[in-house]
Length: 284
Ligand code: AMP
Ligand code: MN
Ligand code: MN
Ligand code: MN
Image (cartoon, rainbow, N blue to C red; front, side, top):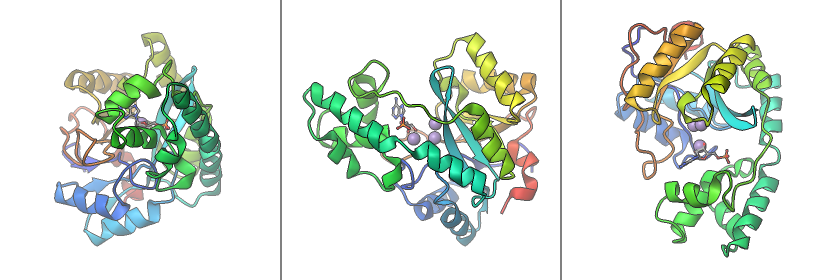
């Protein structure tokens, strides 16, 4: 399989902060022409067996996936894992610990929102949560849109849920080395998710790529829903400079919110090594 494959190796279901079930995502991906798919719920592998079965039912190849929240140099970075054993104890236990503290954080977020006059946000957000372990900022955003506080989720994040805003509560996630190790020990491949989305200066970005490699990380998302055309080229160059394989994924969350649909992305450039080439024996 070469670079000209419609692979979508990044999206979210109701098991984390997406709005579709794994089965509905599989059908939508297939209808959009996806040939190789991975469901990558945040800090959770609870949907993996369902997703693999759903992919099989629609005749689509599948790689297991997850997206792990990591704290690196005081900011949150996401590491995608692909092609691992979803029942591996170190991975399952590590993710469980990473999910811990989300409810407490959500209560603090609601307290912050109450101080600016938005009451009952914790209970409101809970209405949108599919997995009680995984209440996230996205669920608060949906609640604040549906209750008429903001027009869309982007506005909620801008006004309330990002650093310095009333509903923002910093959180200590996993360590970079732990996340890469859990994925690798479970037989998978670790990938830096949407590298252009972090508030890093070039020195810290270089440090992230260097430390990620040193821990055994092997890939980087080059073509993803939140990258611009210029960023596809920048991170293709970085992949080659750092000897990393390249990944491709929409980061689809919801038909109503995501601007990039499943499988609707440009292909990887031919000069890159696609992650699926290194994961050939893990494809189901
Ligand atoms: P959390 O893990 O609770 O910190 O929530 C992070 C999630 O919020 C991400 O996975 C995205 O789905 C979503 N998110 C982050 N920033 C934005 C934004 N500016 N607009 C819409 N969604 C966002
Ligand atoms: Mn998300
Ligand atoms: Mn992410
Ligand atoms: Mn994501």
